[in-house]
Amino acid sequence: MLFKMIGISILTISLLCSPVYSECDFGTVEQIDDDFIYSRECHHEVGRLYNLNVSQKRLIEIVKEDEKYWKDKAIELKKQTDYPFWVAYGLGVIVTLASVWAAGQVGR
Image: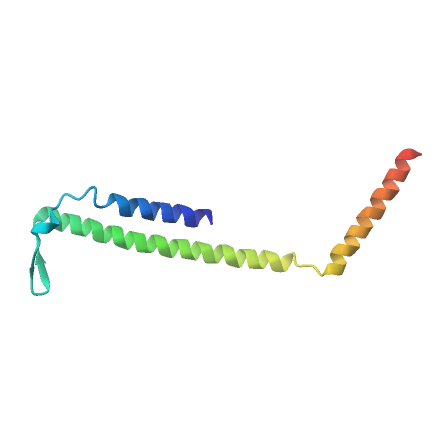
């Protein structure tokens, strides 16, 4: 859960900061058919934004993998500690009887 929150925080901050550092006026970009023509600064900015998008997708994948790992680990631990009711009840009775006996020994 912690890793998920950290990942989402990083993703949100990076998305919010992307337009602030833009050195390109995307209003000057020309579109001819299916191609775009833009200046060198815009070319670098588009490449940076593309790389940022790829790294954000990878971060989301890592968060999902981490979440799946911890869910699997929790299920595994739950299976290891999932005792029947009678075992827990029996242990409770034994501990109670032992504590009563120990308290009786102190008084003597």
